[in-house]
Length: 200
Image (tube, rainbow, N blue to C red; front, side):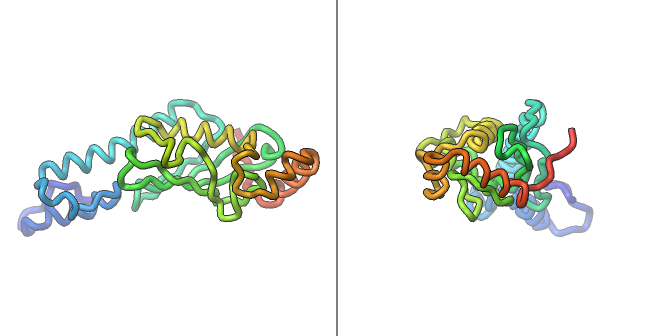
């Protein structure tokens, strides 16, 4: 990949902005929104946004978080990550669950969105994979919140459902009124639909 600010001899000068515009798409920044900054300041913004995400990834890897693994970052868009949630509490400890994290261009001033790509029998996660997680709600989000904190909260929610804030009222009712039935159904569902747990 050609780096912003580097151009081969003989290429027209406009190539600098073309390359910068193309690369900044990876961070969710639209050059058109900041064109008045000038090329030098745009380059600083590009590197700042990239460093934010690389630092987030580094924090997760250094944290030794064993319940979130196989992290993949889309090479064409560093705003989209995928990884495996590996719960340690029944009934979800029979499998692993792939999630997708999508960061908005305004991150960290706006929260990321998390979607379960693997089906899960859970009162706080609906059939489309949308999750009710207070830490990333618009009203609770804080720019200082790190992605590793969000993932830790998500793992805690998967392990211990919160039926008082359901996205699936039927499962919340089952969890509250007939825990044994819920655990049996959730375990069977997990065995059928979840991904294989990674080998330690």
